[in-house]
Image (cartoon, rainbow, N blue to C red; front, side):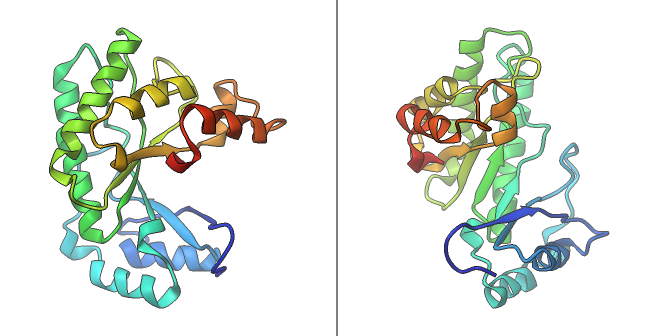
Length: 219
C-alpha cells in the first residue's frame, strides 16, 4: 500500500457472510487499497450484530499490522436516518437516537469518520429542513463533543426533496451547527454532477467554488 500521496480505497462488505471486520480488511488488501469504507450494519435496517461477535480487537490489530490508519477508515451511516424532516418530529427523534447508537458503535470499533446523507424535506419548507438538520446534528453530537467523531455530510444529487444538493445549503448547515469541529463534507462527485456541477469539464473550478463557500479544510 502507498504510504504517501493520495489515499485510495473503496466500499467493502462488513457482514457475517464476509467474515465481518476481518473480511473487510481482507477485501481492502486484495484491492491494494490504502483505506476503505463499510456499513456498520444493514443500511436499511436497525438490526445490528453484537459488537463482541464482529472481531474488533483483531480488526484493530490487523489495521496496525497492514498500515491502515483508523482515523482514515470510513463508516457510512444507514439510509434510514433523516435529520432534515421538518414535518414529522417522530422521524427526526428516531434519526437522532439511531445516529447516536451508530456513533457509539463505530467509536467502539475504533473508527471516527462517519459519512451521513443529510436527509430530505419530504415536501416541507427547505429552510426549515436545513434548520431541522442543524438541530438534529447538534442533538446527536451533544454527548460526543469530547470524542474524535467526525460526521461528513454527503453532497446529494437532488433526487426528490433531498437537502444539501449545493454548496450554499451545505455552507448554511456548517455555519450554524454548534459542534463545528465535528462536521464536514463528503464530496460525492457523481452526486455533484447530477445536481448540476460540471465536475467532468471543470473540476478545478468546482473545487474553487467549494473552497470559497465552504472551505477545503472541511472536505
